[in-house]
Image (cartoon, rainbow, N blue to C red):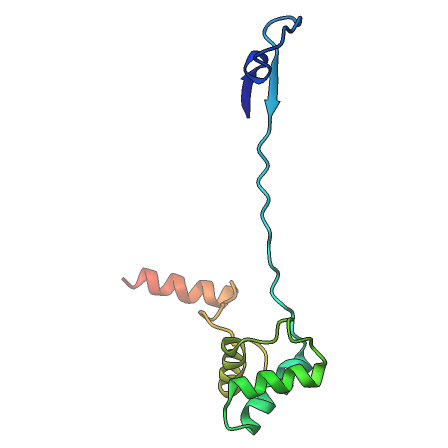
Length: 123
């Protein structure tokens, strides 16, 4: 918080207030968050289908997407990167859903605990 003496704010006026009086000046920072456009599963499937149908062209897929769903020319359509990601996920997993990465999660079962204990004790 920034404090400024009242005489600094009103230098040419006589002010009859008890000392010290401070005016609190708050600085507000506005952050505009642009939310990602949530494309439905049907829209994703259509974009991938049109991409394959038109010789792997992102531009034609975006045009057809705009026409099919009645999106105004100034509104957002899926980017080439988004369509490429959807195509890659479809080829990798056979689904339009996101590809799961990372390690396989294991459960803490008595059998797993025994296996780890035996591995440590044999060292």
